[in-house]
Amino acid sequence: MTNSLRPLGNDGSHRSPLPPAQRPADGVPSPRSPRTAAAAGAAAPGGPPAKQRDAFFDNAKYLAILLVAMGHSWEPLKGQSRILETAYTIVYAFHMPAFIIISGYFSRGFDMRPDRLKRLVTGIVVPYVLFETAYSLFNRWVGGYSNQAISLLDPYYLTWFLIALFVWRLTTPLWKLVRWPIPLALCIALLASVSPQIGDDLDLQRVLQFLPFFVLGLFMKPEHFQLVRRREVRILSVPIVAAALVVGYWAVPRMNGSWFFHRDSAQELGVPWWTGVLMMLALYSCSLVLTACFFAWVPRRAFWFTALGAGTLYGYLLHGFVLKASQYGGWFDHGWLHKPLGEILVTLGAAVLVTALCTRPVQRIFRFAMEPDMAWAFKRDAAEVARERARATA
Image 1 (cartoon, rainbow, N blue to C red):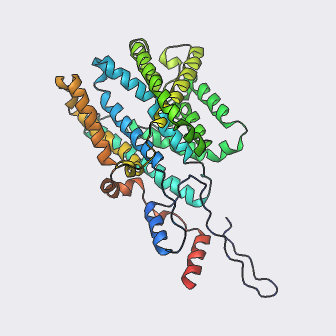
Image 2 (cartoon, rainbow, N blue to C red):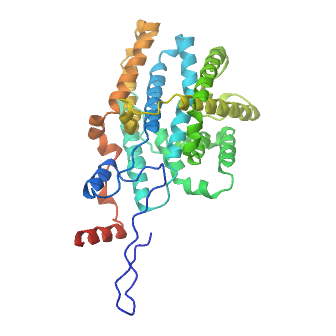
Image 3 (cartoon, rainbow, N blue to C red):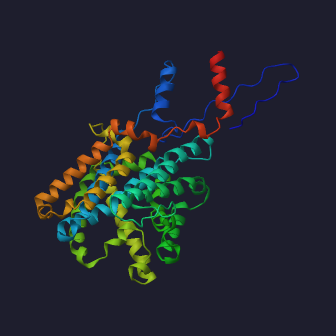
């Protein structure tokens, strides 16, 4: 979008009007915050109605973050329960791939427009800096790890997803240019999985090994989600998940669960590189099948929890403080929590916790960290300023 106005013609005619603001692609949320969008709707009551959020995707995000919190609450308990460790393994096979595919799908309209770059900074970079610092200090002061350093190059705990999303979204225009983006992303991920030299900086192993799911989401269309939401797919998903649970129960004592974290190379997990390649291909296939099963059972219509899908990043980043405090305080050391009833209560507690953290009151309190406006830090787009002046004088 040009920021300059065409000069007056020789006949003294007026300058051409500025082009209207570019509309986002179908299915891609506007870069404006909900507050800005609401204000725009109020200012132009005669205009077209605002695009409604798709309940399916909000439901999927909420259910995915629910599984994330449950999985984290199972970590201190799963060592003494093969059934719980099986559930943990199955959940870890698809919950982050599902979240990443949705993130890729809603990144389809990202380009290097100034407003979208600003949103990338305020919505991802700033929360990463703040929460990386907060988690490091929390680990030092509450956890007693006095040598815990604050390093923006070494994501701690949950913050890896923010730096990964930053890298993935920043490279979105590139994936739209290459001829075979998904095979290329898969090759990069496989090469990363056999390259221990990558190291831990920016958690690049995870960034690269999860990359194919993001690129897949970039090139998915609404009809692809419609395919997995058909009745026959929902029915077929039941025996598939049942078979996965059986296989998982068999594999738990025989397999290194670190494969599902995608944070280490094959050599670091003690296997030859070629075994790592085969293992990664098998894991990607398993993750895609289970993710399709997950999407097949996500409700299509709005429920009481649908609105919480807009606040999943709040639930994701905040629930870690409670779980870490629980571990540091020895809350999981009580023997009764390692019994079936205790495991159920912990699971329900995690679900209630992350649900509460996705609500609007929590969003209002922590919006300064998650969605800061930061108008003071950015130049205003000249075209937008000119449009506002034109509206004011109309």
